[in-house]
Image (tube, rainbow, N blue to C red):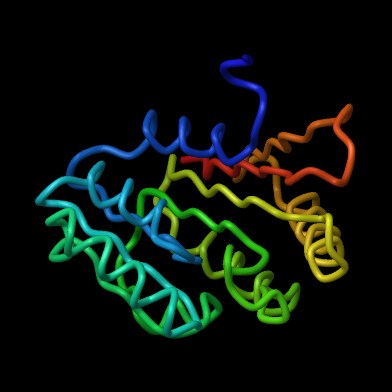
Length: 189
């Protein structure tokens, strides 16, 4: 079994573990079922803070329960609103932001992230990110909305000033069925 290059969500988790430190302020822009939110809450420790966004009641509630069961709920601010509104809730610079786009696993596939709101959220994320901060974005081009969203994200990131941002695209080029794509954006100082 392959260890590192078999799944972009696994790569994203490895980057989270290597990047996020105790006391950091971080954002999970799409809490979904709470897996990334829980990992982030553990990584930031008791002095850190996690902001978590989702538009679905079930995502917020499932995440809340997971955090309570793991005794880290007090480190997380869960917000039932679109990630495009993050600047209304976050008034401080953050160290790390993650987006896992698409639809809620196990949820209604008709409810999914959209290019317009995601681009607005990414632009706000780049403003909120501290110098040397990291933004990770996983896209899912295997469905119609996901393909459109990925194309918009690629265009948006391609236009960013290379003196201000370093951007990588992790993409499996030999896998079938349009596998997920991971973008990594580091804000330069």
